[in-house]
Image (cartoon, rainbow, N blue to C red; front, side, top):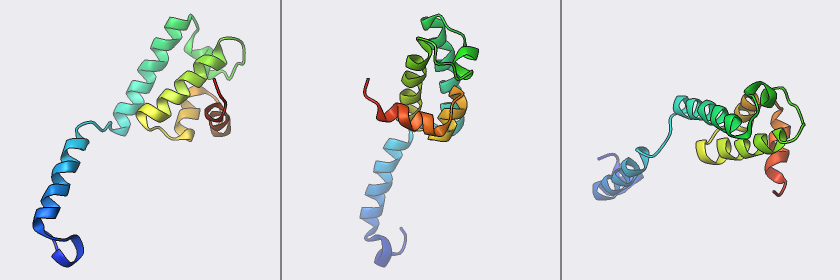
Length: 105
């Protein structure tokens, strides 16, 4: 399976492919990640008693920054969204998201 000089023996290639197949089923497509992020935004806003519009407005009124930071961490670490995509979903800049991730709780 493949050029042995480049990839190694067919047995090695088959083993690697088997490992990859096991991981692929746990990966989230970009479309699914976006849908999950939207759903999480809605859910957390309801739990915190704020509106999505407040989060997207860039407001710094309590508890909005805390909620935004929680969502940013979740979007990036769990769903693999980029800083820019996370920023668009939260109504802030990519630089702001980067600073949120750098700061301690």
